[in-house]
Image (cartoon, rainbow, N blue to C red; front, top):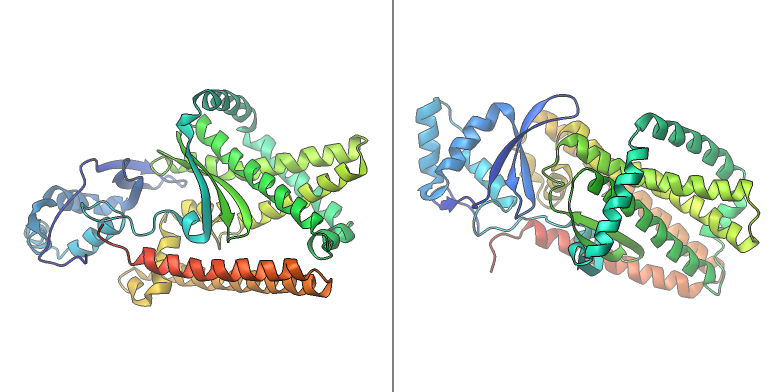
Length: 396
């Protein structure tokens, strides 16, 4: 169902408006619903207009009528339709779903989803351990020292061991044993990363909702948690939870380096530790890039104080005219972000083609064909999901 100026619309019951402070002390309001787990940001200078519109969205006034009321009260022609449309896209108007809800479902295939509260005893133990670990690593100066030390060490370690990188990512054994091991260790690295997010969330009074497992881009094993009240949390809490995943990967790299350098371990264990170092280093680098669904993206939105950047980009790609009513500064940000995201996407496709080509050159035809089929199918499914979810409106 499309919105129209003569339509009568009603706001959902549990809508609330909360004042928050950004990372740079700027004030804004967060408007949303806990039951829908959906929120939009409202600049402080517009909040009075928004509150008036919300009060009149009771199903008895059309958008035209509300526009006239606000014109009479404020002496300004306020774009009520644009605000109501934004509310409907966020699922905050009765009868409308959130248009872009779970991006993991767009970019990946979720195979298992469990309510985390069903694991009551495990949840209590996890909460206790999370508070203990987080009480140590919340001291950011110590963490920053560890980060810089490990980055410097990793750079020289990986640079001096090019053969390991080539053997891991290019010269895959025809038996596919190496590729299976790497796939499993990638899943482990992903799990540790998400566990870091979850631990920081629990330590900051964020409640875990679900635990899921699936395949990111149809190929990479992914674990992820969803949360009840993370979207409504203050930006500083969101930042703590976001960077915690990178901390977890850094801790894994640090432990592996310690085991390699100060303990005597079997050769196959050394190889596994080396693979873990490479995978976790790669995860850190990839997650810091803001041009895909990553920690870097969420950090960027927190610093820009614009939380719907990726959703706006998806809408822009499906309908370029959709950003015509956005102010020039935000339009430049979105277009620049779209350009860099496209470049990263092209680089990813190039890397995949190189990987497949190396599989065929090394005689590993099964792996090359399998990766090509899976990734091609995922690209088609992703495009289909983006188009369908961006156009979704009323429930049927």
